[in-house]
Length: 275
Image 1 (cartoon, helix red, strand yellow):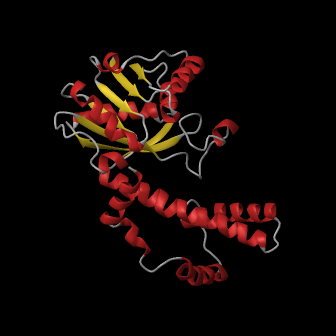
Image 2 (cartoon, one colour):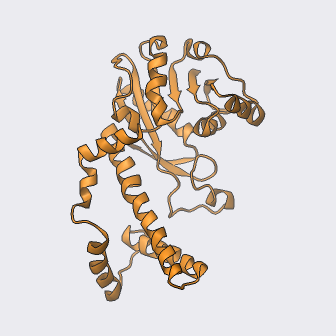
Image 3 (cartoon, one colour):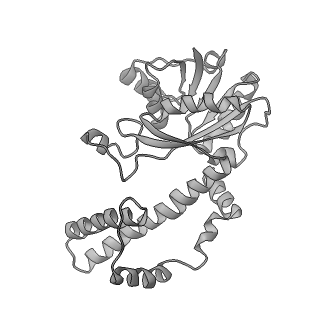
């Protein structure tokens, strides 16, 4: 049985992991510094925490379920206690990409992150439909990267990730650099920004007199059908009027050089701001 030290076990993400690891083939040692987190684990899951030294003694893997801004500090604090060959698992590419993990070639660094439940899915259970984040009821895909370490360690890390993000569908192998392109690049800089603009557009038509519920229903319904066509979920073509609107609207809304957000220096700067 592989022993895993789970840091931040009582936090927002750590609690999810603590829940999913119950009944798994892994022995989990839970580490949590906040009293609120300790209480959450005890009252919610009946789990007692242990000290850092107890958690790391003989641990074959360490999961850092802590905020991006704390990963460098936590990793540096336990570096001397990690035996060669230990796998350090990080749940986001930001800190590893920014170079915040210790310079220890004898450690394995494995990075994994959820795709979250897809908009187009086959969920029929209402609890799954309402699990927008994933990792509870709704099935999701995930991405992982072996940043450093023996090739055989990828399979070991992937098995752990399958429990972290369960229930899961597809597992994608990428590089840390690719993961940084996906987030913050694709998911946050582009997708989240455009969704905020769409919300502002909704507010604008409401301010101009359209009933809010009517506008919301209209927008979300069109997001569904337009998205299905654009991303190939269904066969279909847009009307000439829609194509003309896109031809006119895109240059009004988007700068000609907007794809520069994916340039290495832009991705690095974005990650630097959040770590």
